[in-house]
Length: 373
Image (cartoon, rainbow, N blue to C red; front, side):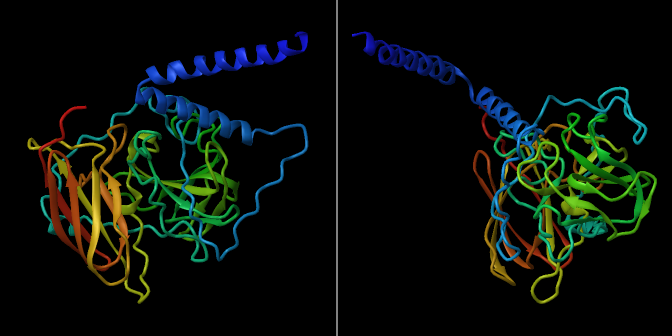
């Protein structure tokens, strides 16, 4: 009888733990579950990447150059938003900076064509993956599980060279353990920030390169487009090696990002012609932007085989449209041809657009908003 007590106690403890763990999860709301998931995953990432005194764990074998990287990379939130408070390389605001006041958005495609500024080169060489990752696009939150994304990702093997997208002066280079260039310190890890030589509408423009394994430049150094800045890594809060790339206009600030898809020069297709891009607005009947709405882009008659694309309009928090376009969704590197673009709020809305090589197509949806949750 004495020998049975450990088994009885073990079963009692197991039942107690299962009950204690199950009850809160049933009562917790979806946002609470999402927050709990993010905090747990960040803690796991930080634990896995923290240096230890013991022997290092063997690294998983990286895929060969010929093998495509199919996994998604995300940058989970680390702490609540906190703007920079000190540092020599940037001029931090004394209080959180409000996004710029929206101007009059482009009414038609002619306006959008005049607003094109595909002035930046890819920050990854041709031998690497130069297409942006679609699973965590600019402005998206991955169904509310992630920090609203202030840049785009280039998924590449660790050590892949990171190149300057445009000519300018390095204003920050190194770890972000003292200054919060993102929502918190130690969020982007090793990074480089370049102030471009060419302003935009009289405002300074900054490009940010984050999660680097190595930094090869110093603050104050002038670089030309294509110069090596460092190497792809996964420092800071990152899952898998990738380059996080941002464009900031007006200030070197987390609240002043723009969608890099509207700045990067379109890549060439198989015949050497440049891909096109799409941008637009989804607004309610009073003209107010609608956030986190799914936009479906289906090919109808295009120059090459491609799949339907699914993106969302920008999340509300600290995200901005272009100063002229005032878009709330955009997508680059689309093969030329005809597409169906659709949104589904209180009902289904659809338009047909044409993507031209090297040009920006424009579409506006004025819709009845979905009912409140």
